[in-house]
Image 1: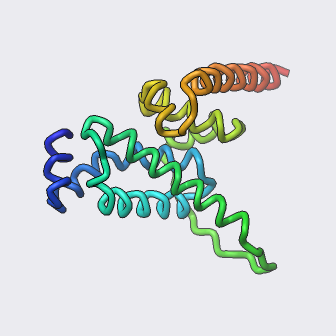
Image 2 (image 1 turned 90 degrees about the horizontal axis):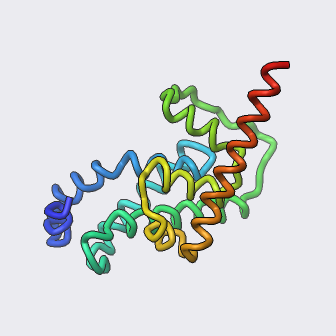
Length: 171
């Protein structure tokens, strides 16, 4: 990945494309954990790719590329959420296309869906994407102690919910 970043910083479009393709699954999981639908996640990812291309020269150290990219993605997701809050809804019902969710993605969405966003995104970055607490702290612009607390509390909430569902199923 280091070599691709070096080439991309020299405006090598093929290297940048390959670099983004390597990160696509990470970006998709992160955007899906924050946003409610596939279209918004796709918009956030495409906006992130464009921003990364335009601002690659601002990346201080190549080894922090993933952290830098995910921070941009999280900010793009937040922008979409802010814009949606300001929308006016009509009485018209939109056509909802059929989509087939992969089993793995569906399982994670079901597991994380009831968690508050502040826990959901941090748990996803920590457990699914393997980011360190310090990296998540940089991405989310939060103190490391807050990240550790949210990991712990999010995990506790998931355990309580799982035990509740398990007991409910036995009745």
